[in-house]
Amino acid sequence: MSEEEKKYSKQLLSKTVVTKTGKRFGEVGNLVFETRTGELIQITLKNPTGYAEGVELEKDTKGSLIIPYSAVIAVGDFIVISEEDIL
Image (cartoon, rainbow, N blue to C red):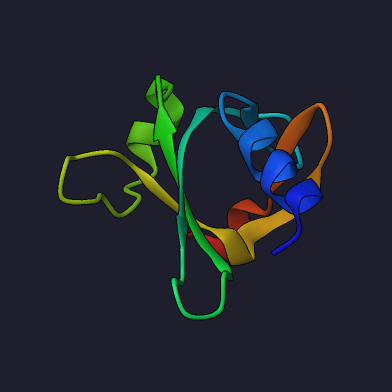
């Protein structure tokens, strides 16, 4: 992984996570990678909204809500996810 990619991963932390219809889920709290390949697998949420808590997302061992990275459809000022891919 190049140095540029490492910086990019760190820039995802604390970005707001929203659905493509604009529903706010919370902020990126942590990133979970596959150690062998470096593939990004999951995003854990910090400061989840009531809406996110009502969607019944999976939780990690610390009780944080998890969003599979496969649900991410865009990364910019916000992390945009496809709600259909997580329900």
